[in-house]
Each structure stands twice: as C-alpha cells, then as structure tokens.
Length: 123
Image (cartoon, rainbow, N blue to C red):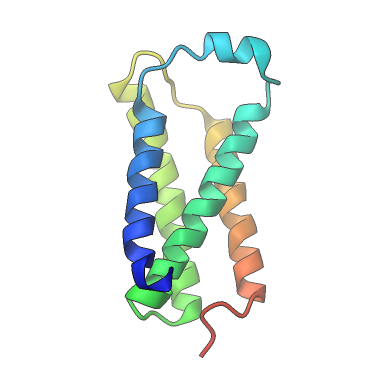
C-alpha cells in the first residue's frame, strides 16, 4: 500500500470532491437519518483524507513524519473549506455550512493526534 499511497490519496480526494459536489436532494435522507449523521460522515471522511495524505507525504514524497503531519493537516483543512465554498457557489442543492467545516476540522485534528502518537513514518 505504501507504494501506491499517492495514487490512493489522489483517488480518494477526487471521489470525496465528487461526492460533496454532486446534486442530491438530501431532504429525503434527512427524514430517515439522525440530524447529526452528516457531521459524523464529515468527521470520518476528513480523518481518512488526512491519514491518506500523511501516508502519501511520508512514503511517496519522502517527507519526515512531523512535516507530513503538518502538510496533511493544512491540506485537509483548506480542502474542506474550499469544498464548502464550492458547494455554496456551484450547486443548487448544497450550501455552505460552518458546522461541516468544524466536523471536518475535528476529524483532521483527531487523525493528527493519533498519527503523532503512532510509529507510522518514524525513521
């Protein structure tokens, strides 16, 4: 998996982008899902995004662990904000949501905390 870490990170980013920008009527989904369930999705999606990019930075781009963690943190948070702005400007069924950004950021910070304690990428 380390060999393909950059390709996996890019593919996941593309899929996440498409999932966030496609036009879906979420009013029907909100009738059957708990009101906070999309925030859990945001948390998990951005936790995974951060993990995948950290691995790509370490294993493909040969960054040191701390620089890879900082880079993945910065990338993931900025990406989340850009996606929210694009939802507001490019779609008619999605809107900018501060709580989504907060959920994204908490997922990123959780992953950064876990990865900073792990042995992944240590030399």
